[in-house]
Image (cartoon, rainbow, N blue to C red):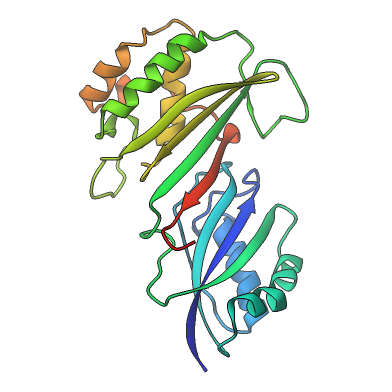
Length: 252
């Protein structure tokens, strides 16, 4: 019997949760997951997530790791024994897809090499998109928004898109892709980077939408980023349209 480390791949609808991370006086995804794991394995389980999502933000792919004292079972046998039971303990809006045995020094947050988000916008009122997409009734200049998004790849310091007073070592991020895609009734903003700052994607989308509304020119993105001042960027868009969609690791 010894302590072993496992990764969980999960997905969740963030509507009723105050983000991923445990916090006082508010229900979080992490809190619900840890209660279920502790019940399943009959010991106190603490998790470490691949990042943190804000209140109301969704995740179609999220990873967390935890340590568990138990018999040394193979990768496949652990999933077969516990995956169904774990999902039975979780509410309908949190689902675990995989339980993966990893090396004891593997880390869900620090070992991630790339993260991807998508932000959904729709243009016509649709009850089935409520809480899952942002309703923007006016048309947007997608060509200008696309041009402005391409400029993001020229920079690394994104202080202007970071939530104020966050305790991070650096505001530098390496954005590898940022583009707008059209769907049947709106737009999807897709962005990938090695890391993201708090509120960063929602602030970027808010700024790009201002450009799409012709309140700013596409070239204004240069001055905004160079200013390193959050007050110069656009308003953060609603959390309901934001999804964490992909996390990459060198060993998964």
